[in-house]
Amino acid sequence: MHHLVPLDNLVAALSRLPGIGRRTAERMAMALVQDRKGLMRILANALLEADESIATCERCGSITLTSKNPCELCARPRKDAQILCVVESPGDIMKIEESGGFQGRYHALMGRLSPMHGIGAADLRVDRLLQRIADENIQEVVIALGTDVESDATVSYLKEVLSTRNVRVSRIAFGLPAGSAIEYSDSATLSRAMKGRQEID
Amino acid sequence: MHHLVPLDNLVAALSRLPGIGRRTAERMAMALVQDRKGLMRILANALLEADESIATCERCGSITLTSKNPCELCARPRKDAQILCVVESPGDIMKIEESGGFQGRYHALMGRLSPMHGIGAADLRVDRLLQRIADENIQEVVIALGTDVESDATVSYLKEVLSTRNVRVSRIAFGLPAGSAIEYSDSATLSRAMKGRQEID
Image (cartoon, rainbow over all chains, first blue to last red; front, side, top):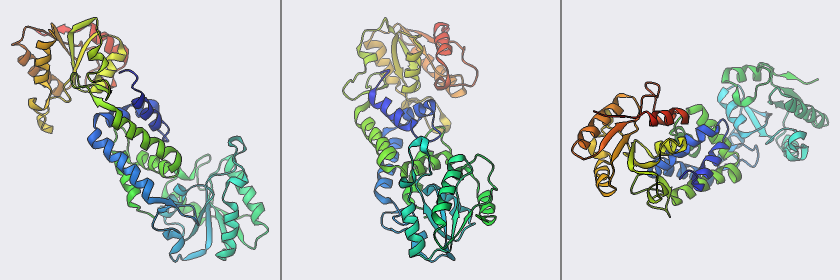
């Protein structure tokens, strides 16, 4: 009773989600096992449906339907299709797109340089980025990373790599509060930061 | 992109969990779809495992393994097996059991009287309670419900029903802060409240 292994496993799985502490995970797990025909089935089905029908866009790395790959952001005409916005993750693409402050294409690196976490340049989608710059005749790369040390290191690295290409490189303006991440920024801040971007000299 | 239906469905399912707001559900959903081979599989498997292997004890209503029904709390010897603690939900049984302040048997009503939510006496496990009092030679029923209006109404109803049986009826002491629920109480408070229970005159 005290330690039902399947219940402990469910609490452990829920605890791995961002922003979910042990106590919240326990309450969620209890609500799920007390409503197996309702809540549990709905969540299990939603997970299975998402797992089957959601894919990663092979071009930009964003979240898309399995049936639409490349995604609509890559496939549809865009006003500034020669501007490529480089972000850390698919979630960042959604945030910037929601802000309405950008009309170009996107490219998710799927991480940022982090020697402490064993993430090096080879783990980011940089080769694919260089290939897209050539294939899609990109004129400007806008780097939309946060303001922490790892982001700064990633920007420096990208700047160096891109210096050999005939492309402008800019970074979104520091309208963001220091130490924050794209993920936590509101649309207005993101939109202003996008407009105020400065070319890297 | 903006509105992937499977992603929206996942956010909706997560939002139904207790204590999870829209914003948190969105972050959880993004973390899940961005780590489908990891996080998503682990959570989906934990849910399926829990759904298969966890059952409701047919006697007390607590959470148990499908392979152990009645549950260990009902099947194993208990020091005060002639004392039956009546609670609202299986989660309450776990909370009281963790507090260590009770050595008898449990009985979950699976709700409390709530005309506003259409929950009447017939929806609670009262017939099963009366049957258990006879079958298990119960000498005392300790009602462990919260301190809100619906709990008070449920206590009044139970007191009336039980007045025809040869059994003492008590309610856990109001060591609980007013307006709180069993679910949110710490072990020390619950243990004290259990010890200070008063017979209903």
